[in-house]
Image (cartoon, rainbow, N blue to C red; front, side, top):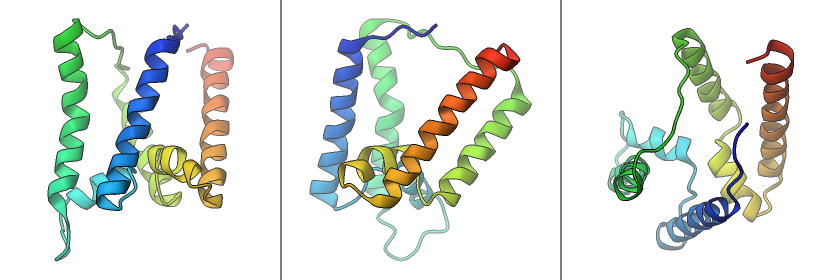
Length: 142
């Protein structure tokens, strides 16, 4: 069972919200990770604006490393099932393209703007996540 940590969860959510707000206020862009990542990969159009994208992605990688440096090792678990991980990655990528965005773009930024397609997408994300947890924990026994 995953431990719920209200203090860390609250401040983590606040940091995500503030970073999304800063990106929107200073750059006029939505903090959707799939869009930021795809814009940082070639081929780049003439107005790629690649610098801020690379900096944003570098911050996503650096943040947990800095946290680990300041507080000690982070407990994590990664499935050793490589085919399952590949399938999951492909499904997430397909879902991001099919849904015109990812959980960060729709769930964090779209909901705060009360965008109808983001409300529908986030409801779908949450329903599929709940069904996946139910199936893996109660039917398959994972």
